[in-house]
Image 1 (cartoon, protein in one colour):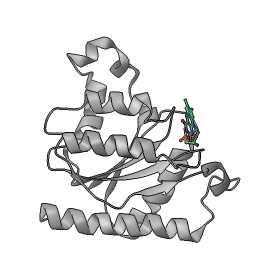
Image 2: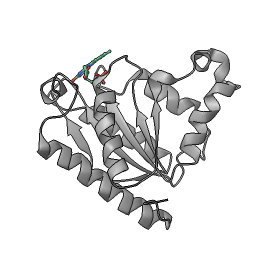
Image 3: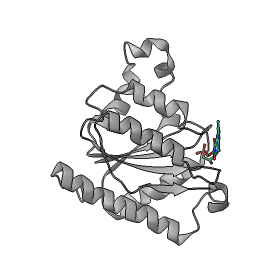
Image 4: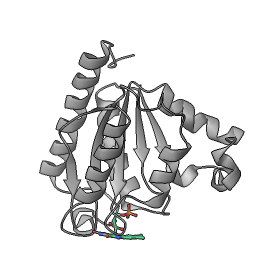
Length: 185
Ligand SMILES: Cc1cc2nc3c(=O)[nH]c(=O)nc-3n(C[C@H](O)[C@H](O)[C@H](O)COP(=O)(O)O)c2cc1C
């Protein structure tokens, strides 16, 4: 199973619209996918007590990371970095087993011209620190407002092709480094 992390809790985010395309791509490839939308995090996780004891309602989130053969992270750019909620989510996960030797790949989504290069590189640093296996091919979607139509769909086939190529290459990478079959499971 691949776990897809929608890295913001902003209602109606463009990141969640891009995530729909990525979901469809995995479905076409018959790869089981679990979507973790940070907009659905339980409110109790934001209590300071959660550093000590995790609320029961968070278990499905932390388990979706631990059970994943690979993690596909979509991050928007907020203030030149990743959203605070994405870093907080990472900080709430079990250490060290959540990312240790776990394959991960990244997509950046931004209003600006850099396409969330900064948050993706920040995440590469964090996941590198946590001994994840980083898939080198990243996808950036700059000026995302111009890339989506009124229904929130990407219109450029070249960009959709880039997302497909990344997901397919990532599954190959996962199967190689983990020595498991992910497709058709
Ligand atoms: C709090 C906040 C800060 C933002 N800062 C940046 C930024 O530094 N650079 C940028 O290109 N876009 C910035 N944006 C715009 C987002 O990149 C834009 O909303 C894009 O659609 C991706 O975010 P979304 O998934 O929340 O829609 C910011 C948006 C928010 C809500």
